Amino acid sequence: MPVLEASGIRKRFGGVVALAGAALALDAGEVHALLGSNGCGKSTLCKIVAGVVRADDGRLALDGEPVAFAGPDAAGAAGIGVFYQELSLIPQLTVAENLYLGREPSTRLGLIDRRALRAAAAQSLAAFGTVLGGRVDPDTLVADLSADQSQIVEILKVLAGNPRIVIFDEPTAALDRNQTAVLFAEIRRLKAAGRSVIFISHRMDEVFEIADRVTVMRNGQTVMTRPTRDTTRDEIVAAMVGAALVTRNEGERRAPSNDIALEVEDLHAGKLSGVSFKARRGELVGLGGLHGQGQSELLRALFGAAPIRRGLVRLNGKRLDAKGPRAHMRRAIAYISGDRARYGVFAIRPIFENLVLALLARDRPITVAKRRREREIAPIVTRLNLKFSSLAAPVAELSGGNQQKVVIGRWLATQPAVLLLDDPTKGIDIQTKTDLYRTLDELRAQGAAILLHSSDDEELLAIADRILVFNGGRIVAELAGDERTHFALYRAAYVTAYTDAAS
Image (cartoon, rainbow, N blue to C red; front, side, top):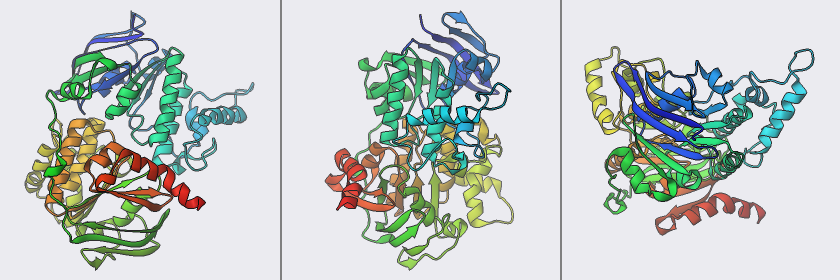
C-alpha cells in the first residue's frame, strides 16, 4: 500500500486548468522523481499534497486513508515536509533561528533554550559542513549567506522537522557537484530509514542517479510512471513534451568572428583577483568551476552592478567607463540572473510591466506606448513559449519556471550586443532550455558576445565555445575544442587551483 496516493486530482485557477486528473503513488522508502515541463502542474500537485492549495476534485490518501489538509500546518503535523524553489528564510534571523523557527527548544520556564537551539543547529549543519564553504555556524545571519549556502540551510530546515515524506522541488538548483553529492547521501539516509521522497529536478542525470521511479506530467495530467531502470532519457523527454526534442548539432553553429567584442585586463572586483580574458563577437564563453569562485562577481561587475577596484574593460575596442547598470544597458549590455527572487521579477506587478522593464529603463520614454511595446515583446513570448492567462496578470500567478522565462524574455527584448548570463536555466524545464539555446545561437549569429555562468556542467560542455574555469577568484584553466570534457572540467575545478597553491 502506498504511503501517499493522489488520484484524479483537478484544479483550476480562474480560466487556467492547472491539473486535469493528475495521479501519483509514493511507496515507503522510495525516492520518486516527478518530472514535467514548467506549467505542467507538478508544483500545484505538490502544493495540494502539502496543504497549501485545495484540490477542486480528486482523492488524496495517506496510508490508505482519505485526507484533506486544512493547511500547511496540518500537512506538517501528518509528517509532510516541503522544500520549495522559492526560499522561505528570514534574512534578519540567524541560521539556528531559521532552522527551528516555530519549533524552538524551551527551558522549564517556557523561554527559548538558546544553548539547546545552537547545539541542534550545529548538529544539522555538520552534515554539510565540508561543502558549505566559508564559515557558517548557528549564529550566522542568513542575510550574510551566499545563494548555495541559503539553499542548504533551507533544505536543513525541512529536514529538521523530521518528516516521513519529503518533497524536494529543485533542491540542487544552486548547489555544486560536491554539495549535491552530500544532499544525495542525506536522501539515501532518509530512504534507508523508511522515509519517502518526491524529487523534482530538470537535471536528468540526477534523476537516474537518485530516483527509484519516475512519474511524468504534461498539461496537468500524469502521462507516465515507470521504474527508473526501465526507461531512458529520450523516453522521459518525449513524455514530457509530447514528442522527441530536436537535438542541437554543434557543427551547424556559426564560428565566432575574429573581432574582439569584450576585453578584460587584470580585473579586481569582489573576490576577483587579476582576471583577464577576451570574448569575440558571436562567441559563447562559459564560466565554470565550483559555486562562489568569482563567476557571479565578474558578471555583476561587467554590468556595472558591482564596483571594480582595479582593471580595464574594453567594449568593441573602447574603454568601458560607464557607471551603473543603466549606463551599461545603453551600451547594449544585458544581465540575466538565475536568482529571480533577488534580481528578477516584481511578483505583484503585471507580466507586461516585467517584460518591458529593461526596454523602459534603457530608453527612459516619457510615456509608454503599450501596443508598440507589446509588438516588441511578442516574438520573445512566442519563442520562449511563455504560458499565462493575460499580460495584465501578476507575475506571481506564474510557475517558477515561467517567472524565469519572463526574466530571460525581458533582456532578450533589448537585443544585446553583450549578454551576461548568471545561471539562467536554474529551475527551467528541458524544452525551455532547448528554446533558450536556440535563441542564444541566433544572438551569436547576429554577432553578440555571450558570457554564461552555469552550475550545470552538462550545459557548459554542450553550448560553450570555450570554458573559463574559476577557482578562488581567478581563472585557473581555459578549455576549448577537444579539451572540453567532463574530466578536464572536473580537474580544473577541483585540482588545478590546489596544485598551483601548493607549488
